Length: 113
Image (cartoon, rainbow, N blue to C red; front, side):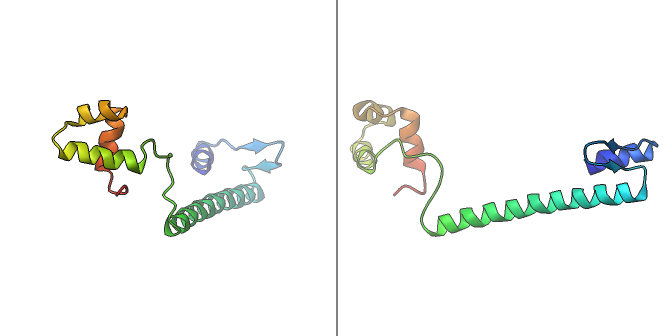
């Protein structure tokens, strides 16, 4: 929005907000507009920081986030045993009634042990 206001100002066009009482054609209006834009930017940055800090804290508590597992640890262990016994991923997925892509993704996941 600030870039748009600056582009318009360079062309001799001023923003005038009736509801907010801002007129970028005056020094006070430009000042107020820039202060409000700076406050909005700061709020976005603070929100980003709080979100990242919250995600990091959750990770430190062992919460991984994301969707729930669609395959149980028991199913995954059974799948590993079947594959070790010579079954293909496709055969294993059919035997365990698990979608092949789900099984493949979970077998490759570094998070799932």
